Structure formats: C-alpha cells, structure tokens
Amino acid sequence: MSANWTDVVVVARHDTTPRIAVFDLARTDGGELGEYEPGAHIDVTVEEGGKAGRLDLIRQYSLCGPPDLRKQYRIAVLNDPASRGGSRAMHAVAEGDTLRISAPRNRFGLSSARRHLLLAGGIGITPLLSMAQALDAAGGDYQLHYCVRSREDAAFAEDLERHPRVTFHYDDQPAPQRLDMERDAGPPDADTALYVCGPGGFMDHVLGRAAELGWPSSALHKERFSAPANAGEPEQGADGAFTVRLSSTGVEYTVAADENVLDVLLANGFDAPYSCGQGICGECIVRVRAGDPDHRDDVLTDEERAEGMFTPCSSRSRTPLLELEL
Image (cartoon, rainbow, N blue to C red; front, side, top):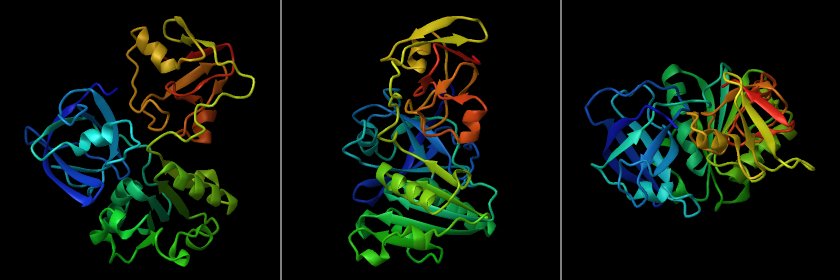
C-alpha cells in the first residue's frame, strides 16, 4: 500500500454513460498534482457506502485526462455490480467530497514504437484515452479501436466520434463493423506496438488472436482491471507450501498452501509495498535471489521474469525455499 497520500476534492462529477461516472480531482490545498505519463493509474481510497477519506477500500483507476494538466486529475469509474465494492462506493461520491489518492504509477506506458494500435473494450478506454491525447499533442501515428456493447455504453463518445483516428465497434450493430483482428490489426509490423485494456474476455480474445496472427509478446502491451480467470492456479502436482527467506536478514517464514507471500510478510510486520493484491498492477514487485518462482501474475513480461522479478501478492514457489531481495 502506498505510504504517501494526497487529499483531493471532487471539483466536478458527471455521468458520461448511465453506468460510467467521470470525476475531476484537485488538491484540497490548491497545489499542483504530480506529473504522469499516459497510461498511468492512481490508488483511490473511499469508505464503503460512499463517504470519502477513510482507507476502507483502496482501488486503482486509470488517469484519463490530458497528462499535461497539472491542476486536476480525471478518472472514470464503471458501476459494475460484479465488482468488489469499490465502484459502488465511488458512484456514491459527489462533487465537493474529499478523497485520498496515491501518486501516479505506470506499467502501461507508450513504447518507443513509431506507430501505436490502441484497442479498448468498455471502460478500458480510460488509459488508452490518455495515450491518444498525448499522441495527438505530439503528432504521433496511432489508431484507436473502441469496442462497446452499444452507443449508449460508450464513454466520451461525443469527444471521440468525429476523431479521424478513432473507430467504434458496437456489439448491437451488424457483424461487419465489429472488431476483426485480421482486418483491424493485421500481421505484426516491426514499427507498431499494440495496446489492449478492457474486460477479461475481450483482452483474452485480442491477445489470443494477436498471437495467432504472429504478433510477438514484446509488441503486446496490456493492463487488466482484474486478474484473469486462470490466475493463481497451481501447477499440476504442486502442493503450494514453501519457505520464503528475506535476503537482508536471513529471516524465514512458512507460506502455507492457502496463503500468499505478501500476506505472510504483512502478518509478520514487514512493511511491504502493495496495491491491487491480484498480480496486475506491479506495485509489490521484488527480485528473487534464490529458488524457482511459480509466476501467477499478469503484469510481468517474460524478460522481467527471466531477470528475477516476482509478485509476492499472487505468485508462489516451485522449490521448497524462495529467497527474496528484501
């Protein structure tokens, strides 16, 4: 969990669709907010039931305003009945309420590619919108494909419908206008990076079809709002119990089959950083010094895993002992 929080006030709130509310946030002391790169997100604390300011719920929301606007942050929140409670609490927040937010973090930034292909599903438009705004400002080459159930469900539709680089795909319209990866993404191009954000099923479809079309994993950039359905599943024959050692002190803790490393560290008074607790945000990443990690996150790249990166909130160990650089 972030140790540094900033008090902000909701200076404006409006509904961009019947289920998506947009919140503009400014510091309560009138100061400037920190810079961020497109694709970044913040932690937001909100009390369950809608009152703001307590740490009852901590949720992550992508920043979807222009990155160069220093006085305000903008987030958009889908009221999802299947959520863990954060979206319902946020939808009870009104203009004038105060919240606490973390500094922006980003593991979903724009790459150095010459061209960018942005694929958004539903509320997944939020980080990609900030990317599109930054690319517009810089004169970058990109195309944004926005997939939603219907025109009514499209957040920021009025701002995007006439944009020459944006294509909408509606589920309730004839099949030919729906997203077709072979047509809309095509084969890989060494100068093009693909970015995807949205519901799990949408992301799995996009990433699966991209792989079938030959796109290398290094060209695919993703951000999930929840862990994929198969995340955290043990390998066949693994019982899950192991020992974790801290390299700085040599202290060892047992991680039972029904526990994770992060919870064990916190229970023993270790001040470990964390945020989502699902292996999708990257806040808790540490380095493995010894042992063979059983990666169950959906945030690390193959290269980062090869370098010893590890997410203690979701991943485990294939070996009896796992030593972490802590």
